[in-house]
Length: 498
Image 1: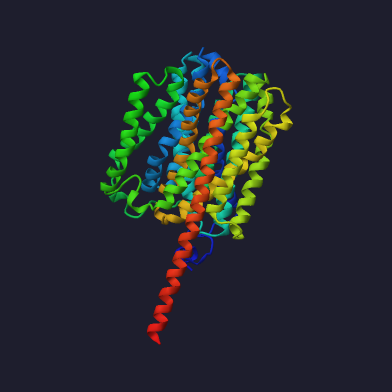
Image 2: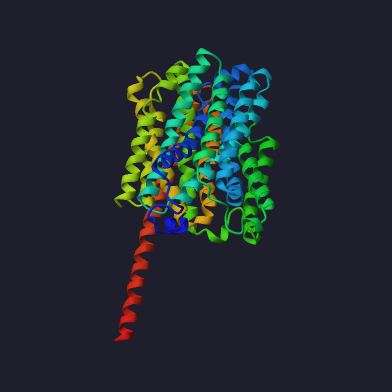
């Protein structure tokens, strides 16, 4: 039997089947991409005040440390999804690990520059590594596995890397910042990324490029339009807390950003090889992206303000704030396993799981927004951190599976980059909007400002839940209509034969 015959005959693999040891190491390496991306994001959450003291920064500027990373990681994913389709996702995956290592190292070295701007730039370029890692990792899984239980498990395990990676990144960043110095978290990150680059080079199979990829030109105009638009829109919201909406800087960047994003869609429809095949994506994808955006924008707010509430309001140490995250990994792993079982057994559809995930985002934000200043960890933050990962690890695999199944195998890079763009970009944008709310409602009270931001997160996740329920209802109505039409056609054919 040839390799092609082996791949086509195997019920789980779209490629020649992998040996179990190689599959395990491959899955570990690919799932670690999600973990390292979140760990890199978390590196600047807990020690952000200490990093701000190093650069003598304004308190409102510290939100840029995670936001700069989230901005580029979300903005450039569309471009890198397309690049992976053209040059091969394994090649992009290995290169992304090496790129992430370089900029993590420079982010640590930036402590000697005494320049916050340089540190923000390093964080932004570090985010570009994440922008290449995530779509290539998801496309690798989508290209290796056929739809079925094995693919469901693979995407669920990938999603479990998010809470585990975020917790480990936060814990080690807090540990090193308090006992040594904060740059050491970035130095260790650089070393780990290099190790993963080697593992990816050896154990990830060669998947090749998309058919006719050499003949396709890169969509430079579309890429420039959407990247510029997303950056300007995000910059306006994240800059507004400091300069205010009355400033020409915020108004001009917001208007230009929106115009570029609007112009992107007609440009893509007229482009031979678009970065996003707008004409090929149906309205189901738009529903999924909207729901994911509302969910993850609320999650970014939850992470940033829960940690800062513990450190700034309750006066906890960075190590204590990191220890608070202990429930996140087991909860995330449990959520991933549960999601895989629900999907594999057919107990819930991916749209239903997506809607259910919004409940946990909303509950986590409600707990944090309403908790008293002086209250034990076990009565509030513990429950927020225990329940919120169910939102993360149910929404991400459900949304990814829906988009992955909507597009053919050769478009897996685009499917992966679309969902990942929304997930990571919305976290950064959510922080910017929350910063505006915080600044305007605080009126001299840090607690009031934090609560305002968390109430915004409740509104975003609550709206996401209602949109998701509407999508589930609409999907069932469409399915019922299709079955009715199919039955009518079959009856008509039978009548004609008789």
